[in-house]
Length: 179
Image (cartoon, rainbow, N blue to C red; front, side):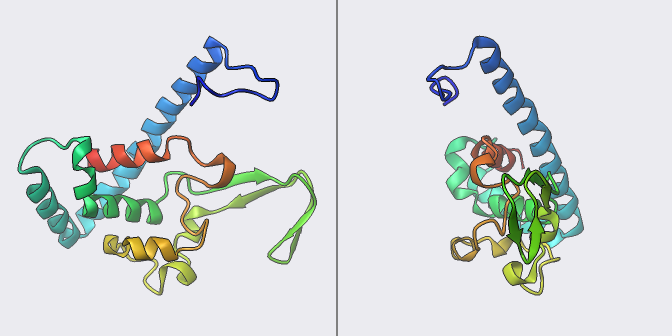
């Protein structure tokens, strides 16, 4: 994608730009994935019943061998654990954006040039989206039906819109396999 990217004049990236983008993706992805996994292990240590269920899935799917990409579709609970940990403890707890024009958000006037912050940490605990148990660590909430019913931007550990993390899919895959 980076090699095919073109600016408004149709030019591609220089070798230096391409190198810088790849390094940024690589380093930023590792740091945030490491933070997400740290919270996974913290939560698993505090919830032995979840840890036991995860261990049972790993034993069943992997049978003692190291995980591979081909195992991802069968590591359903492992992915739920990662998503739930990132819900409670997103690697980036807030995202700032600059208003491009004067607008109103939730009844508040936002002038052009103002920085507006969205707190994933707060959003991910909102009872409207995650129920009365929004503070609870419940990986099993992450069913396909639950995700389909979430409003856009109610869950955004990777940001959202045109600035969504380019490494989102890779980071989730990496986190599940490492967990």
